[in-house]
Image (cartoon, rainbow, N blue to C red; front, side):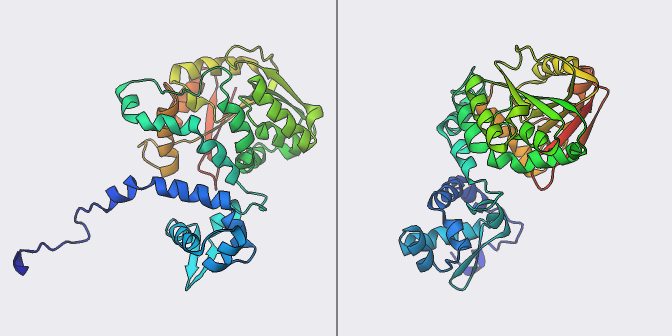
Length: 341
């Protein structure tokens, strides 16, 4: 080919780089998992800086540590200067095992076979096949794994929700925590509000984990449970607050409206429902994390989705609620929807 025949590319020219990056994105997942398993972030936090130092600290080989650390630097979790590594702010806050905000244990659920295996047949799901391992099966064992693994991950949003609801004002509250899981949302409420008591609803095995967490938090005397299917269980009435945290996204619009009618009937006259969800903008492609959560629901549920605020607002209005408000729960990627009876 003559020199004059060689094409010239501009910054706007199409490139296979994005394809290559996405095709190998699984490497970011496995690199993060390996670093957490090796406790690499904690080693750097404690003072190991070079690949040689880190390798000695975690019992690894220098070559492997160097490549892993360089890779984590390209993903923004580490910073590198000359041959020394340091933690990026997100890693310092959330991936050092001794940090109060540590969330590395969440990988035990997020990377579990229950979650991951459905994505091996995603094309079939898009064609209409049901997920091979639906998370909605009664008393599914994955939810006990969820409750154990995700408690630390939910401490921050639980605290932010309690703050938004002004739990510290210590108003007497009767609280219903639907699909309580690890229990952290209700537990945080009663920790901040000495005049609140919580009734948690979930499968029996899951509630055992929640009760252990309530015991550890010193609030078990104000924490009780109802075991069973949230759609069928008798909750009682007179609740000042109902917590719906990371639950509605598992179901379709009509199913949620039916549940919310039951929530509405369970609330006291001036009661509120507090809903935690990944809420994308109306374009459904922003913000990125909230918008992409819909894929998690496609892979793991028959009809779940990431709902926009207009959809959530309509659900609550059709269930009888007077109004709802949307509050971004920064710095998390989720939002809080407060709905008034």
